[in-house]
Length: 333
Ligand code: CP
Image 1 (spheres, rainbow, N blue to C red):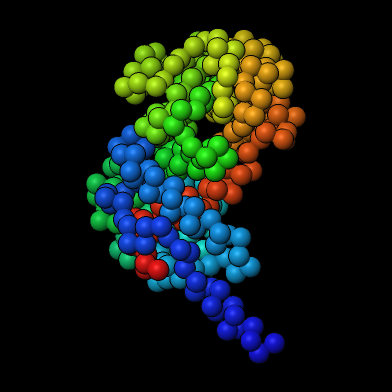
Image 2 (image 1 turned 90 degrees about the horizontal axis):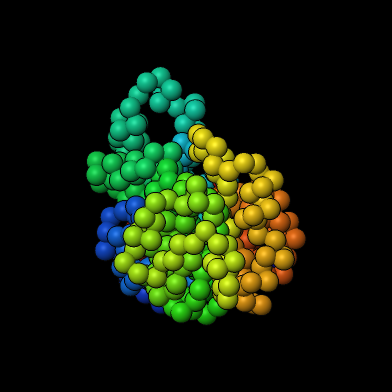
């Protein structure tokens, strides 16, 4: 009994054995994947690998960011991203504050910039922001001296989602280079797809995207110099795929009618067991969540033996710990 507090303290204070104990990202903010080079991406993935075991300990905490404060500012709904940023910060011993934008002074007409300057005056150390307008995190980053992390901006980028997807793929497949990844669904509104395309092609995967013509952005193949293939034929995208990612149909962003009915969408583009026969036998299934079950993905696929959807969620905490650590200058081991 008397040994317990000491053991708990030791456990709490044991830093993970980072492969890059003094590494930092060579930038103040994480705003997108497009501007990262492959070495920076690999640094984040390797650091996340070292942090993953912290969440498997009985005492899920290390002192890395003790005394620092992370603020979450989300202008759009979120379960996974907001909770995992909060857990990641807490597991690094940082203090966290989540601002409820609907009950903040933004509702009284305060500008976003005045709001974040007000938060910064209270000596916060990092800001995590999600907004429906592309570019908002970039604008805030230009005005703030602290790290700003993009937790999703409109249909532009969702960098930490792509990082956790890549982490999950690498964990299961052992590599990214040389894999065929099929991304199926609502490409037009998907920041997840854009960030994944940047990341996976930088690391040497070939990415095939498919969905209804109306949800395939024009000139989409020009997003990256090479490695991206666009086809309206879902079977062509799925054929021989090592990884299949279903995208959420973002009905809240769709101001016009892009397809005749949800039933028809599910029939033509939903990931079903039958359709997945085109992919490799050991293909893994990803979905960023939240899922529209029975529309973009059948329940028996989402819950099936090849699905890594809950692994993605678990890995999100480790990846966000790595991002906070690399941007906020935590104590090296
Ligand atoms: N994948 C994702 O961003 O999920 P949330 O909207 O729940 O954060």
